[in-house]
Each structure stands twice: as C-alpha cells, then as structure tokens.
Image (cartoon, rainbow, N blue to C red; front, side):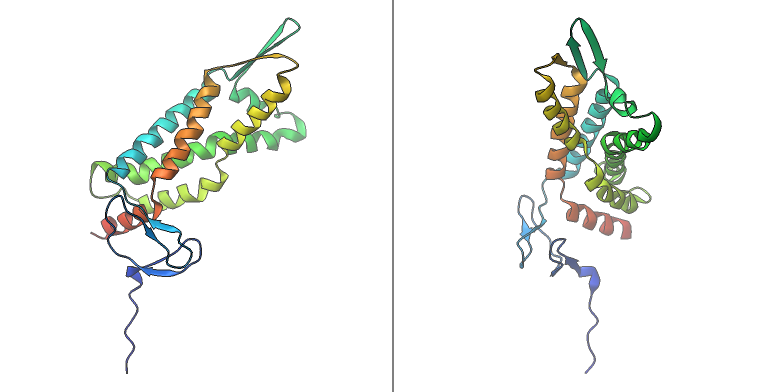
Length: 210
C-alpha cells in the first residue's frame, strides 16, 4: 500500500511546543489555540494590518522625537545639566568603554527602528494592495529576529530606577523626549499585542504564491 504524501503546506507548528496543526480559516475576532499547550496560534482581527502599520508609524515618529529632543534636565548647587538620548549614548565613547556606546545605541535606537521599518516594509504594501513587496517575507523574518534585541523598554525602566536614586541629590525635570520614549514603549507593546504573527506569515505565503 502506497503512503499518501504529507501536505506540509497545510501544516503549522506551534511556536511553543512544536505540535503540528492543520491550517484552517479562522474567523475574525476568534482565536485558534494549540491543542497541546493552548498557545494562541491565530487571532485574526478586522483591519489588523492597518492597525499594525499605523502603530508602527507612530512608534517610529516617537523614536525620532525621543532621540532629538531633550530627555532630562538635572540641577544641583546652581549647576544645570541638560541631557538627551544621544548624550547617554556618547557618555561611554572614550577609551575601553566605546563598545558600550555602540551597544546602547544599537539596543535602544538602531535595532528598534530597524524592526519598525521592517514591519512597515512587510505589512504596509499588503495594507494598500494585495501583493506584498519584494522580499517582504525576509523583512518580516528580520523583524521577528530583532524582537528580543529591541530593548527600549529595558532602557526606560533603568531610567526610572535612576530617577528614584538621583531624586534626593538633585532636582530632576523630564523633557519631551522622556515622555516620547514612554509612549514609544506603550505603542510598541500594543503593536506586538495587536499583531498576529502567524496570520501575517500565512497571508504573506498565500499572496506571494498567487
């Protein structure tokens, strides 16, 4: 008896436990969960691509604002010090600490910005048209690869801890860049919550073939 070949195109693996599932159409505003670990696999929402693109654009604008506007103002003993994110990046630019400056710049500015741009490139053309852009699959894979390395939220938590410790030694005033960075973290988190990755993967695959 000849075995029937397995149609791998109709299968999807759970990203948590690797259990295989047959891909089926999932209605909007419903969730398809893994039968083994109950991880959410698909959670399609109406106009999800529009929301993802709008939130990514908002986060990118907030990133630009956070980089170029004042972040913190410190005053103590008649002296005032104005600092920005660029000042934080270049604070370790001397001697052996230079690699730390590159790491700070990459983790809190460059990689988050590249991830947002990759999401916009992968999802944006599908929002306004049917066919995805060239290499959209590679761009979305790149965005997912950067996700663990985008540490803007870790930076803002570190700043909050530092403000608590410095508050008793100097007068601290937060600038517009601080609030822009806080909003950036919130918007990025909301974007990751709205974005159903497996749905985007399936949409990219289906529209690339057609």
